[in-house]
Image 1 (cartoon, rainbow, N blue to C red):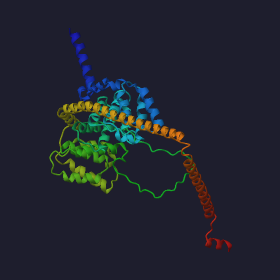
Image 2: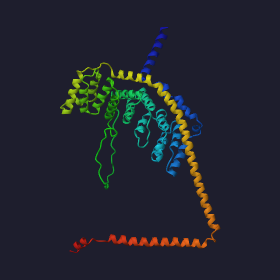
Image 3: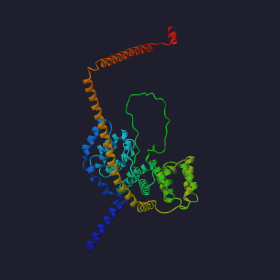
Image 4: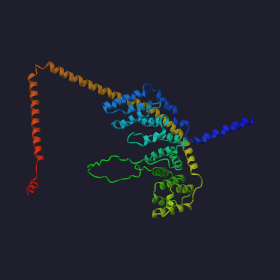
Length: 445
């Protein structure tokens, strides 16, 4: 009996450890998996064979030079098996090269991100989302939340933090779940911040020196937003951005830590001065975290700006600080946001799936109607040319003199053009050999 109890107890402990490792905040219902899979049951997508359809779109692009946004949307939404990532990204890139990219459907953004996350390579999601110029994929809040929650569940805080920085770059703080998950992702990433390397500048390996004439030189400009590439700068601005939209202790804590990472020292000194009389101004723990994040700020000989910062932080230590764990506070904030907003997000997303289906059908019908219209116009023009040709054959002897006069006019016109060309060539030749008088005199001297 005791043996059975101990065995069950061991199983329970192992099960608890598994649950603890797989930390997640969103329920399975939040993913709306069943509702999302229903798109594959529509007659339109059931007929699509992804690989054959990709080859058809490839041929259309190579011959006509463009592809329609609705066709790309149909291709993306029809994918249900692995192995289509290369074709998918190739078609997205080609769509971006055409004017049709401005008509990209909302369901395309969602389907691309979800396919890469669930079917292929989750680590590739950020590369696609961050390359907005070549792929043009912009997720919605539901997608952002799924991405961050999945990475947090897998303890991939690096990927979760990268997704959080995309929200900051879009200056999007509308969804409370997204905001809370973004703060949590950045906070957990900073525990081990050495895995994310800044992109290396492209090396020019050519040995030849190429000189290019330019009309003017642009002054170097750094916008401190989209130009940010250093990981700690991106994380710092993300924390500062989401902290700015909160008026509580956690918000001020995130803002303070983020501005330190962003090296906005003068701004920090002003903020600390403004927070003098604020109760529970920041978490006490953040002061130690700042020292861990930027140890060089407190070592060696400091500049005037850093000295002011150090004095400000030392003064902040004596202020009314809040005790407790920042991580626990963030987790409580996430749980509250999920309780308040999750059901609403699920309802809205389910509604979007139905709307996307109707929009796709409507756009496809308009697209087919436009194709049929162009085909009819082309057919009418061809018939008109055939009728004109037949008419010329049937009325040739009746209009023989008129036709001869037209031929003579055409020949005279060609002759005059040829004469004008000869005159122009002679004029250009004279201009090439022209020597200014002053230059000529000097040369004779």
